[in-house]
Each structure stands twice: as structure tokens, then as C-alpha cells.
Length: 112
Image 1 (cartoon, rainbow, N blue to C red):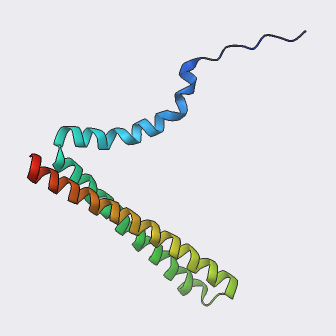
Image 2 (tube, rainbow, N blue to C red):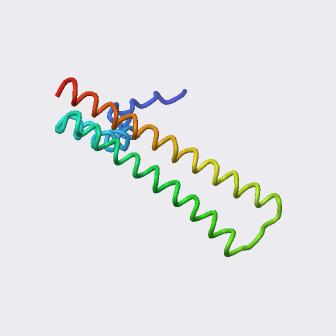
Image 3 (spheres, rainbow, N blue to C red):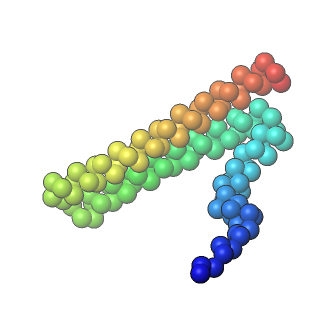
């Protein structure tokens, strides 16, 4: 006959969610403690991360071109695709940051 299934602890289900909680705790505390100014500050942080990400992508692309010279068509296409993906992500971060800055400014003007 088979062994009965052991009951797993319910707290083990929360362990994978712990990093999400820890990462999300900073913006929530920032917004809660500083209000709309905190929201705008978080937007400024997102814009700076987006700018840094875009600059690093271009730097990596330029380094590949300078160090390895002209690559074959397949490698060149792959490098261009990687650059396009990285810059697209950077632009999305910048747009999200600008939206948070605008939301913080509007909230501060109307509700602060």
C-alpha cells in the first residue's frame, strides 16, 4: 500500500515571494513616508536607471565593434538586435519614470 502524503508547511509557499516583497518594500515605504514627493523621487530613480541601461547597451555595442571589428552578418544582426532590445527596455523605464514624476507633481499640486 502507498504511504500517505505528508502535509507541507504553508509558510514554505511564501518563501518564493520573499524577494518580491523585499524589492517592493522600498517604493511603498518611500511613497508612504514622503507622499507625492517620494513618488516623484522614485520616478527620478527610474529615469536614471533607464539612462544608465541605455548608455551601457551602447557602450557594450561599441566595445564589440571596436575590439572585434566588423563581424559576419549573423553576428552583426545579433548585436544590433541586442542593442535594440536594451534600448527599448531603457526607453520603457524612462517613460515609466517620467509618468511617476508627473503623477507626483500633479498629486503634490492638487492634494499636497
